[in-house]
Image 1 (cartoon, helix red, strand yellow):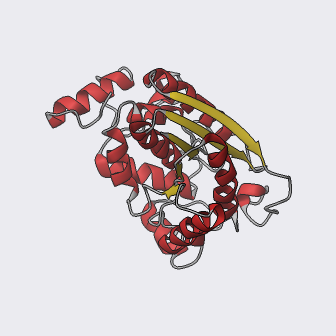
Image 2 (tube, one colour):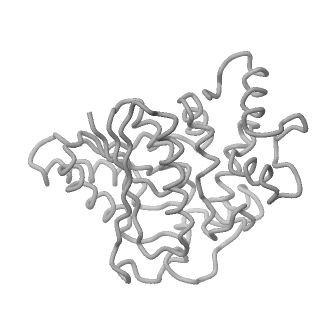
Image 3 (cartoon, rainbow, N blue to C red):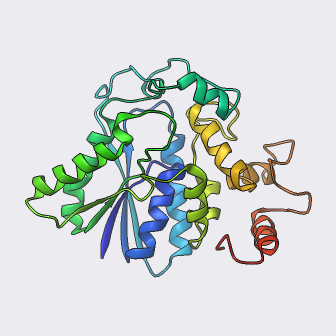
Length: 272
């Protein structure tokens, strides 16, 4: 069994990758270089693949970066231009500001193009499933992260290949961020893999700017009362002066964090 994973280097796509590794012995990751604002995502994707290759030695895990022609997505979004990013004081403020409009980072057609490009790659690798990290609960009102978009894309892929040999998988489609995080943590190496991901639209490490993606990610960890492994890594590396939220004084590193959380829960809620 073979799967193709659209791997941006962020939290959601990494969750999809770990989920694919539970079902497939061969997983090929594709990261899109669409001339985005920074290269931090692509670097993170490579680090995630390297880490999970060590954690899943029985699997064949490969990775490629696919270059998208410059200018295809234009400069309408801050993600493909130097336009100022919208920032928010908190998730509540963010929800009120965005309301029913689209979050300004929306890139028209991005998920349509990405999903389409993965189809011939899936055929080349003889893959049965394509994993994408779209989520209808991202509080951004992206039209290409909806159930309707997913169903239309799934049907279009079947029509394009002439059968149902390739299935579009969107395991996070109906999950709130904190529920996706809890699910990821039940899979080997999932929680720890997040230390190598990148979410901040600004490209900063550690993330400082309170953009949409950063606020949403922080709210998920706050919901569970767990420290973000990315921030734990930054603290251990001396890039943060203060301990991240929910990291205890007794936690020297991420291994200590995982052990403490599991001990407090009385069960292995985070699979190391």
